[in-house]
Length: 325
Image (cartoon, rainbow, N blue to C red; front, side, top):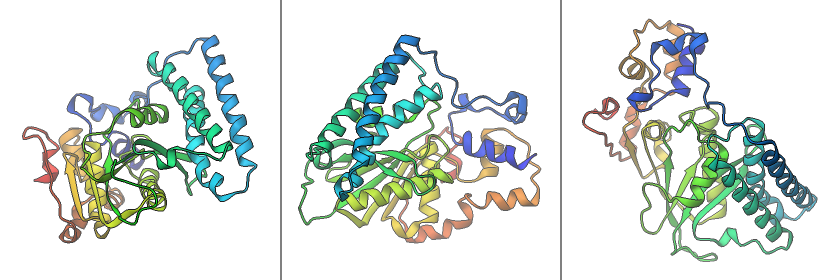
């Protein structure tokens, strides 16, 4: 089996429900599903209207980029994420349902609102509690990347107390465009919101199981949050379910010294077990494939969990229970 095929399966189809598993047939180049699927056709008049509104926001962003003050520069990514999300959805045909067109309108309106606040020197969202979407500029490619936050009501700007932070890794979502991710994070607090805790929802560069660029996205998003909020680095935890559970295993064993606890839900932790049990493949890996698997397979690093209290959970009939066992 070609090593590229292995990586395509591993990073694009990792940890999904059994009904969504593609199986060995997906190894055939002519049979590989397009992920994400091609979205719906947006009517020409609607597309033009969205492009016009997006253009207005881009003009405001251009005005903000001309400013040299530190505050504007640090907050500008919080505006740019809205323009980029809609622009990418238009360019790459990532509207998957008609209702997502209204989502795009809402995102452009929010981006415009933030731009106007920043131009007036009165940004409100940095001190907002509850659900907050923010952004940062990635060192990988210079792109702006979004992340979601749940900021507890007890958080007060200018205080001295530091807050626990939990990172929640999302599960696989084949239609989780940046626009849909931002929309979710504006509306949904997520599965787990402990009292007095900041919850970070990283995007992870779509659904690549938080590997490679997705892994860096988590670390950069965390760095951004730590620079903007009073985070207690001794009380930072990782959690997630399914594909997010796999990410939790990965971050727990590779960065055990950074977390006070890990709580993976389901999620495979080893490539060969995933391919055999979930993809139902017969494996005959080359030596270099086995070597490359070790980059993210968790069993070789499991000893690190001695430094990271870990509580795993799974459905008793879920094949992904294998990792916890």
